[in-house]
Image (tube, rainbow, N blue to C red; front, top):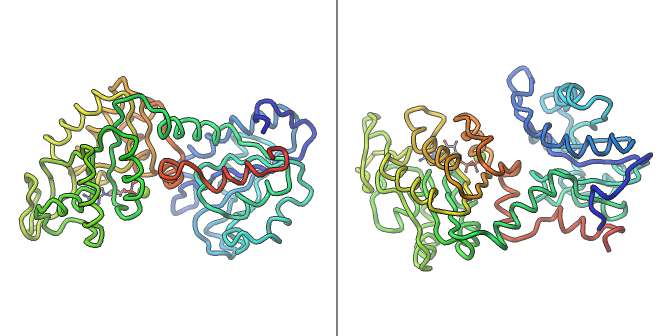
Length: 364
Ligand code: ADP
Ligand code: MG
């Protein structure tokens, strides 16, 4: 396929799938326009070429019906400031055909369109109409954001500089164990914090009190621990005791205690590992960082990501938000705009959106 930069879009009507699934406040104002700004390099090239640009995105989960709460109007207003004269269709998920990948909905979307550009990395792991439909018939290309994301994450998967460490945390344990297993094939070691660590600690036989954990994943964790790659778990934990009082523990939590952050000893140990690596991928906060009492572990890891000479990549909505909250977002090499998509690309090496582009008429 000709690369995006090589194609001239002059005079073409170009339909662009973007990921403008942005956070809104209670008055429907856009609170973070990172995802809109991330699409600007692609939009600028198309507008510069003299194309007619029509953007489309989903927003939230309106479940296949129009809903004023999920209207694109506030996003369109913000877009008009950043890229005047560019059209943005109404929320794709107002039509049930989007998520069911209905061919009739695809036809409706591409009616009168000359070319398709996919720049929605954050949605590329979904086989939805707007992602996998248009490239069946239209000449297609990867936008600049999608291209960059694929380049960075494919390098991590296929050709990372060693030592390569993955730092994982957050709360979606069962969602993430697949990627843990895939990463074990490419990393030199894993660092695990966040709520995720308790299922691993339980698998090692430690008592974890009432901390968040997934009992049905204990066997999987046991198996992953036995594969022979170093998996670093916290050696100290901060949380609340059975009476709800702030408390610091070692690896063993008493009955009723809840672990909400890695302790300073673990944060220091994790920092050493990050500093000594040449590639670091971080997904998932080390603790419940939204509560300042439990933000220390995540802040220390974010600081290490900023300080290390390693090539650093951060994926995951909450991890990226934590990084920005602590002011380190411009000190890492790449902040992925896709949480689920970045994990799936690392795990499987491909995404439905990428496979669809390879089947486009100008790629075959
Ligand atoms: P990401 O969006 O970066 O992929 P997740 O969505 O998996 O990360 O997890 C983020 C959430 O995990 C945060 O809201 C954070 O409060 C929560 N979390 C992290 N550690 C703990 C813990 N020990 N107990 C409860 N929640 C936690
Ligand atoms: Mg999240």
